[in-house]
Picture 1 (tube, rainbow, N blue to C red):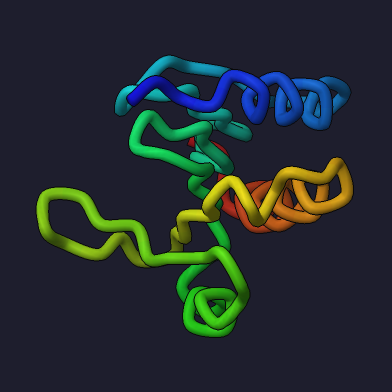
Picture 2 (picture 1 turned 45 degrees about the vertical axis):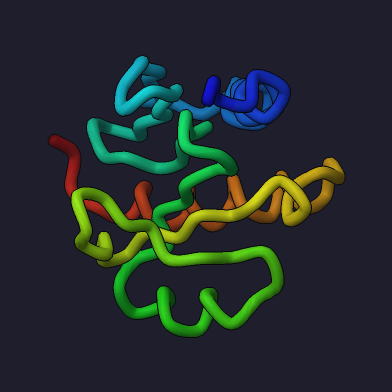
Length: 110
C-alpha cells in the first residue's frame, strides 16, 4: 500500500517553518524527523504514525480512529497509528502534527 501522499503534503506544509526538520523515505512511507528524532510518518501501511510518547500513549489510544503501532508482531511504545478518518480535516491533521512535534522537540538531538 502506498503512503498517503496528501497527508505527507499536509505534514510537509505544517512543518515547513520548523527548524531541524528532515524528511526521509523509510518503512514504506515518509518519516519527518525533528533534530534526528522521529516525529510523524505518512505510513505505507495506512494512516499516519505519530510519536506521542510512552506517557500519553494509553490516553491517546482511547481516541477515535487511533490504533497501536505494531511492527514484527511487537507494539511500538510511544507511537500511535491514526487512520485516515482521524486526520482528514486540516484542523485534525494540525492537531496530530503538533502532538508529534511537541514530543519530538522535547527530546535531546541525535
